[in-house]
Every structure is written in structure tokens, then in C-alpha cells.
Image (cartoon, helix red, strand yellow):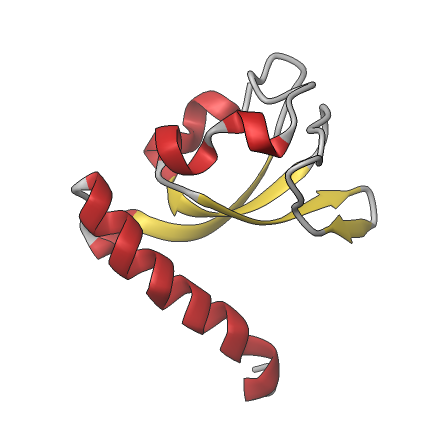
Length: 101
């Protein structure tokens, strides 16, 4: 188990997202999970910038990080998604399926 200092920001973030996103989207807390998945060539995200992706509005989710090969990229509005990016995201797995492409 990692030291508390490593987990603390993520557990706090998850509780905050769980409380707001689930209420706004009409989801139960059990539906919201911390997930990661790779986006493929046919994903609607490929070529889009984060600010245009509407992850929060359309998918009731929160992007935590993007993994490209062996490095993690912190999300900024200007971040452009590419095929093979691994998204680390808090949300409902069923709602996020269309993004995998």
C-alpha cells in the first residue's frame, strides 16, 4: 500500500467528483469508478483538444491524466488526444465506452 501522502489527493478528488458528478448525472456512487483505457484510431477524441471534448458535460467524467508511452501528461485545455493515448479518468464505464474507438 502506498503511503497516505501518495493516495490522499486522489481519494479526496474521487470523493469530490463522486458527490457532484453522480448527483448531477443521476448516477449512484457505485457507477463511478477510477478507470484507464487506451483510445483507438476510431475514437471520437482523436485530434480533439481537451477543451472541445466535453468529457464532463457529455460523459459525466473527469480526466485525471493521459499516459503517452512511458510518460504521464497532465491535462490542460490545449491537450490534443491521439490514438494510443491511455486516459486515466473518473466516470461511468458504460458511458465512456464510445470513447475507446
